[in-house]
Image (tube, rainbow over all chains, first blue to last red; front, side, top):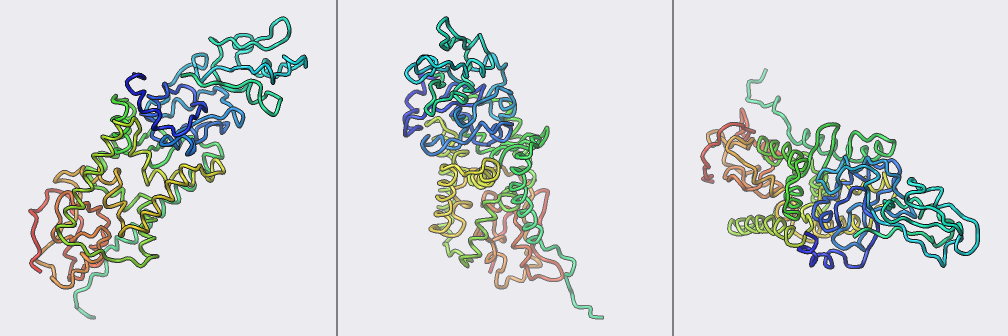
Length: 168
Length: 283
């Protein structure tokens, strides 16, 4: 399905935009087909995590995105239930796949010998999605990480060392 | 005591219509405030609204989403059902009694002192064709581009997103601001009500949902004074209520009824039930 519609993507996004979609979002192409910009997910989010995409998304402006550094997703799983078009589908929080956290070792305090476990402590799937290795450095386990972005929010450096990369 | 025929009890539809438009506009200002305070039983905007268990989707937006995805989502269809039925029953009353963009558009007309557009019958006909072309292209392009264009460029959606973003999020997104700017520009640059009359996919689709039992304006030629045609001059949609056809785009606003001078009763009224055969005015 994604292949059939692949040609449309470049037109829809004038610039490459990779902010995260709310939990339960269908793959990007199918999501863009369905989302009618009704703001229901945005209004239902108790944390104010979901905001409308701006013009850098081209024709996809107004669709919901999450910028973790601003406000991550706390996986309350309310928004998929209010979607009128099925662009977001209800699911368990363990099954969410908004993206996967990636660590930039050149920025991460732990990799530079400073004791820091902010991301490990904040992770809602502590131990499963992220853990510390023998050198006390954080390690993300791709399969269990849902991409909620809480780690990205709490990462102490000005430029975050851990960043969620959207699932494609 | 005078026995001159009078019509003191005649309803002034415009007052009720303005009250309705104002109430809906106010609703979409209060809604984000309530959402912000944690109320989440009413959610959304005029593209799709959830009121407790009742779930509404703009039929044009829903249809273009279906066209883009080439699949049917059950909740989408149930959401479109109620607006669909309402339009079948009452006609496109949404445009003149509910839509805040229509309200704004009428306000701009008043501000710019726009009253009548002089259009020949053939021009009216070609504009009507343009309207269906725009609606069909919006749906077909949605399928081609993979974006629900009738939702993306929905004027009722944009004008209800604006207070939502301003109040709930504290900032208006660049997309919404640009869309409102574009719509305002068109509203001012083009002839009166061009967006509502020709370009709006939501309105065009509602106009098409018409059976012979749909509420309509009935003209009674026996009581008509055939005078200065206040009704046709007052029509915000540039129609002549004395010679209307099914898909003319009448939104049942009732402005023509209010100005009808016939006594003892107006020769225009709302009517349900089977439609009269179209009669051409002789004057």
